[in-house]
Length: 121
Image (tube, rainbow, N blue to C red):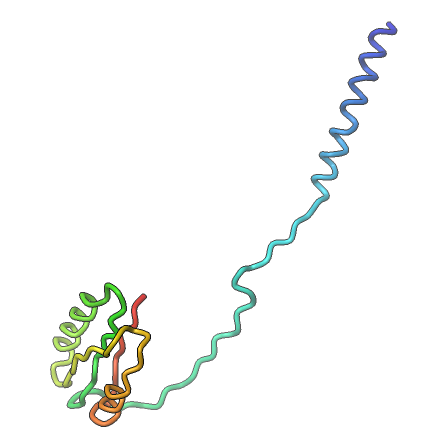
């Protein structure tokens, strides 16, 4: 009888820390933060009415971002097909996509009613 009591007591001693660890793990909480932070609300800014692009000149500017040339060519083709009464002017910006091109921007301001810029992904 003494042997059984001793084994029971030993088992109880081994189980007590385990049950304490389980109850502590259930009480423990962690805090998870959103890596994007709190996003500002989206502001809707009404754009002025436009009379349309028919008969106007619109530049399509390729900034030469890597691997966008096929997209640029396809975009120019589709725009010409869908808006045949608009004068679409495809242009490539000098340098790489991060370089400034003041000459091109001056030409766009002088000759174009609008511009579409292909900036990459």
